Image 1: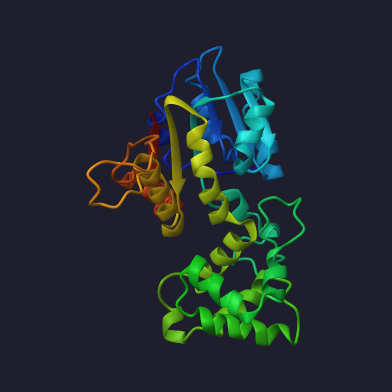
Image 2: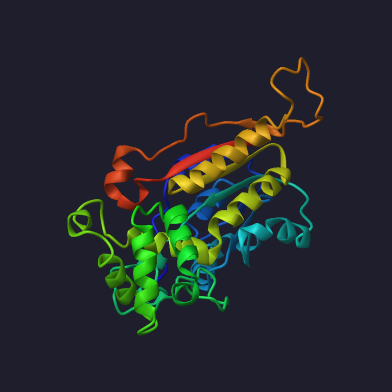
Length: 311
């Protein structure tokens, strides 16, 4: 069963300023928790387009949202294809779009998917869309040492990136990596014992980095934000939940750029570049979960919600 506790549920739905007859896009449908809450606020003419690349999520959300009938349109794809999907449905503009980024509780807890470092027998997979050929094992077994070091440092913010990359390359010369447990052992052997004892599981950052690289998570996010803002009606909102600093930095930067795109030198008396603001950042500071939610759902602790409104 696809079980996933929706983070910042009320805050996200409220941030959309839902119009009962509006059209909304859930770009990371998951199990359909946010989508159900949105649909419950829509009237008879309101519609929700739900997008997810995970087959298990599509199956679970289809069942969960079945009572809403044709008001819920579910598409298996990546949210980067939102524009193409809306075009295929004959929809030019929408009233709101929201994303709940990162990996779902279901994906983490399903050992066969290879997202978790806690089940050592799982295959090194980590594909969010299992139609893709490339897996985490391909990255671990084929990337050059310098490239492994780069993704561990940039995407995992791993201070021992160089040690881990070197150890992986040495180990795979003897035997290719096949399971999550083999990767965990290589990571542990690369980190001093006193450092392994603090800051959570020693392989957490490595698994995050490889997952992000494999699924192109940061590139997709960076490439999609401007497109999504362009598909909003005036007053429409884009709400994005992030789970680590890399995602949050991208959202914060792109939102600010859309609010103030002027590239004229600061000493120019008037703007001559012709870049026009697309709207405003609603959240000057990100919305974070209440203490109660953080206690109930530990995975919500790092989540942040940022909102942009189209002018």
